[in-house]
Image (spheres, rainbow, N blue to C red):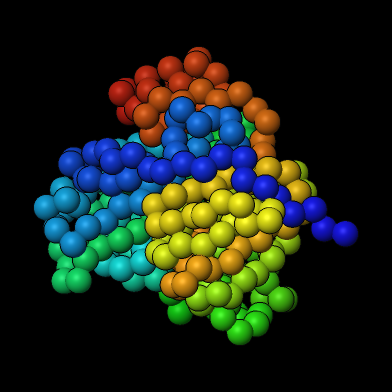
Length: 282
C-alpha cells in the first residue's frame, strides 16, 4: 500500500534582483535551508520586457554546488573559465557541476515573445565538493516526453518514467526532475523514493496537490511534501503545468556565502581567498 505525501509547506516566491540587474522570483533560498536538502535555491526568471533581464549574470565564481538551468522560452549565452561556451535555447537544460571551482557568465539574449526559465541549485556532499567541474548540456530534442495515460504528458529530464530514463544520469543526489502537464480534470499519482525530499512548482495553471487534494497550487507557488512514497496531483478547469523535483538529502552542515557553498566557514574563507589571489582553479 502506498503512503501519499501531504503538503508540509506552501510558499510563493519573492521578487528580487540578481546579477547585473535581472528581475526574478526567488522561490526558495538561504532562509529555507535545511528544509529542502539537498536543494539550496530555485529561481523563476524571465519577462516580456528585455530591460528586466538583458543585463544578465556577468562573470562570477561557484564552488561546491551544481546549477540546473531549464529554459521554457528564449535564449541564454554562457561561457566559462574552462573555455566552454554556447547557447541554452527553448526547452534546453544545462546541468553544471561547479565542484572545486568554476567562473562563468550567463547572459540572456533579447528575444521576441519573452524569456522564461528556472535555475535550481543542488548541494554537493563533502566528498564531492572538490570534484572536477563539468557540464551536461542537454538539448530539447534529447529530453524524452511520455504520456502514461490520457491527459498527462511528462518531460523526463532526470529520473525514469515507464521505463524511459532522462538524459541527466549519474548525479550524486539521485535527482528526479520532471516537467509535467495535466489537461483539465486529469490526475496522476507519481511514486517517489522514500526518504527523498520532494517538491512541486507550478509553472502555469492550477491544481490540487498532496494527500486528499487539500491544497491548491497556482502559478508561482511551490509545495514541499512530507515523507511518503507517492505524490498526487489533479488539474482544475485549466491545464496545469508543474515541475516535480526530488533528491536524496545529504544531512551535512551548510556554510553558504553568495555563489559558494561549503561545509564550514573555514572552507568558505579559503574559497574566497583563493578567488582573490588567483588560485581558485584546481
